[in-house]
Image 1 (cartoon, each protein chain N blue to C red):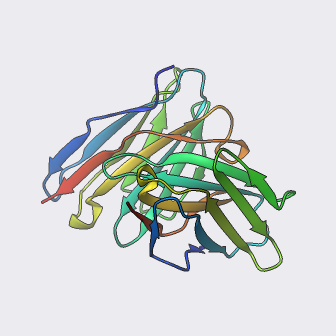
Image 2: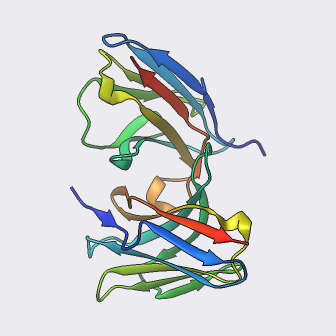
Length: 109
Length: 114
């Protein structure tokens, strides 16, 4: 099957700094990508999505970058806050969704 | 608008038993997808239902099955439970097909198989 992987399993940042979470995807035909945030004991929460016809999309404090040449996706969180501490997943869609294993973001006060 | 709800939230079963999990999507959503989440394998796609029809299926044995009702509510069933079936089972709903737009996840059902 297809696989979606993450470069860093754990990321620690200082409150107020910017965070960058990376993801490599394997299927060049994937046309839709989503970043999710999952807090302990909860289901994944949609953060931001991007389609393959775009290379950048911005939301509130978050930006997703898509590099189709190297099949790489990143999530940038500006001015990281303690409430951003969670596990972040990327997901790619080609017929169905495939999820990365997740990166745990620790925000130090 | 109420979110995706899943029942029960926690379940303990023994090997060989069968279990049925329920998912109520957001009102108006026609697609329900099911996922299994484990520490070792992460989130894995089980199946997607849209308008009572199974649209896609993941790589799980036939012991895992599901259905969707006319009101878009969905159930998944696991028969002959194995220890390895212990996991968090998540459902997600979307307005259209899952790949067409945002999916909203429920809180999950934590299944423990003893």
